[in-house]
Image (cartoon, rainbow, N blue to C red; front, side):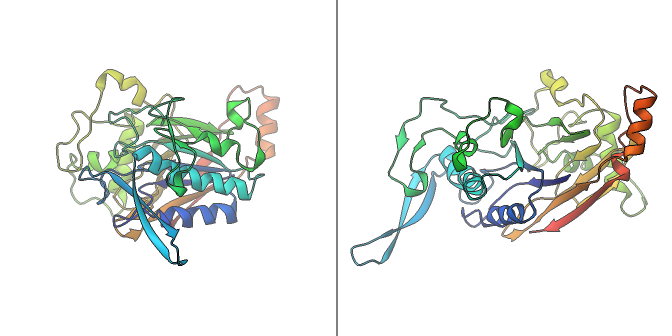
Length: 332
C-alpha cells in the first residue's frame, strides 16, 4: 500500500497558479498511490495576495477581435478559488483516468479561508449548501454555484455514478485532527503545526542530534492528544483559537500506527514510543519555493503471522507497521 502525506500551502506566496499542486497530481497520475492525505491550507490566508483582506482575483486569457490573448481579471469568492484550483484539478484527474483507484482525504487547516477558524475543526463543507447561484462569467469557474466547493463533481467525473456507499467515494472530508484506518493501519494526523508550538515551550540541554523532535512527538502519544498543551503559545504566527470544551475531539482514541505532524521543523521519519512511526512531511510550498511531502510504502503482513493468530483465536493482531514501512521525504 502506498500513501502520500501532503501539507499545504499548495501555491507559492507570489501567485495563485497552484503549480506545485499540478506537479503533485502528475506524480499521482504516474505512481497511482492508494491514498493521498492532503492537509490544508488550501486557500491560505497568509498568502501575500489574500492576507490583507483584498478580494481574490482569478486571471484567464480571452481572445480579442484580432486573435490576441487578453488577460482578464475577475473577483471571486474563496470557495470559488478552491473549486477552480483544487476541485477542478481532481476532477480533471479522474476524467482522464476514470478507473483510478486513488482515494483523496482532505483535511482543513486553521489558516484556511474556507474552514472554521477554531481548533478542533469540522470537515470542509459548502458555505451555501444547495442554494448558491451559478455565475457563468468566468471560464475557469463556469457552472460553479456561489459558495460551493464543487467536490461532488469529482465523484461523477469520467461518467461515474455517485456511489451509495460513502466508503467508495473518491474524496473523503475529515476533521482536523483525525484518526483513520486504512486496511489494518491506523493513521493519525493534524494540519496544525502543534510540533512547533510545543517546541516553543520546551527547555532542553545537550540532547543528541535528532532526538529533540522525537521527544516532542512522544508527548503527543504519552498525553494521547493532538494538541498536548494549554494555553497555546502567544508568539506571532502561533496563535490558536483552541476550544477546550471540545478537548475530547482532539484526543487520540487509540495509539496510531503512523502519526503525521507536518511542521516547519526538520522533516523526519522515526520510530517513537510504543511502536508508532512519526512522520513530519514538511510543507509542499515554502514561500516562493517548492517544499516536500512524504511517500509511505507499507508492505503487507506476513501470511504466517495471520494464520498463527487465526489458529490461536487472537482477537487482536499486532500489526507491527514500523517493521514493514518505508518512508521517503521527497522534494517537489
